[in-house]
Figure (cartoon, protein in one colour):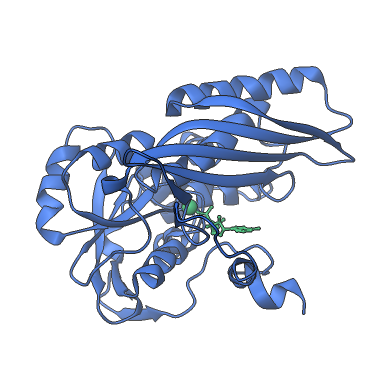
Length: 341
Ligand code: ADP
Ligand code: MG
């Protein structure tokens, strides 16, 4: 059978069936943003690995080495944050093309260092190999949380509020701009630069996750938005065995995103729903706690917005601005091994 018939997620499910867990200390194996391993004393270690491949995840004509280093750390820190955990350390495996100059590596490590500082972790080692042509960066990150404040994709209940940090869609639109250099874009250059920066230098919501973990807010499930809002919400809903309503009018859109969409005739809602790499936290919490959550994030600097509600009925209902209700059957989003999700 070819890989494209299975798709990325079908493949992972198949791989999972080959590797049963041996240790009782495994709290979570495959299927969440991180694996979870219990520690004596009541803490959990979480571990995640994410790789970036040149030509698939980045293009060196548009990314600086510093940005590449930053992003490699940020995408992993985002998965750690999505468990409610704080990043502690990482190891990095590099596949370096033969023609690389030393200066490139110095700049790459500057970006890595900055991100490690920003997200509060240490880079402790890794491996280095050479590749014939393209870059490969594979980072493994370990984080830590108290076992009572582990947030997983499972746990959302009907009536819970669906909430996200930050804004959605900037990165996808930034990528679209990068990938169409010949298109005549209308609107402000500064807005487009902002969107591109959001794609190349994403922020992991580590501080926000820690704030939630330290609070008494009843967070019932969490994931980070890497593949696209609809698809990642789909993962959270299926892990929790519930459905959800997503409200188009409530989606938090940045001004540069909205303005660029309007000026260029792009459908903001669709782009926000399907576009990936926002690296925001998407979580559910008891609806009685929404007020307290908003209070806790007022004047904090990162917006926190309720964008929908969990339902007992499975599937995602997309409630459009015009009031129409659409059932999203196969949420759009990124899937390796498939042409278009
Ligand atoms: P995320 O988008 O949050 O990084 P992924 O979609 O990459 O998550 O991975 C989903 C789950 O599948 C995770 O639990 C991950 O550890 C697991 N996984 C991915 N690739 C493999 C693999 N080759 N072998 C075993 N588990 C894998
Ligand atoms: Mg994730």
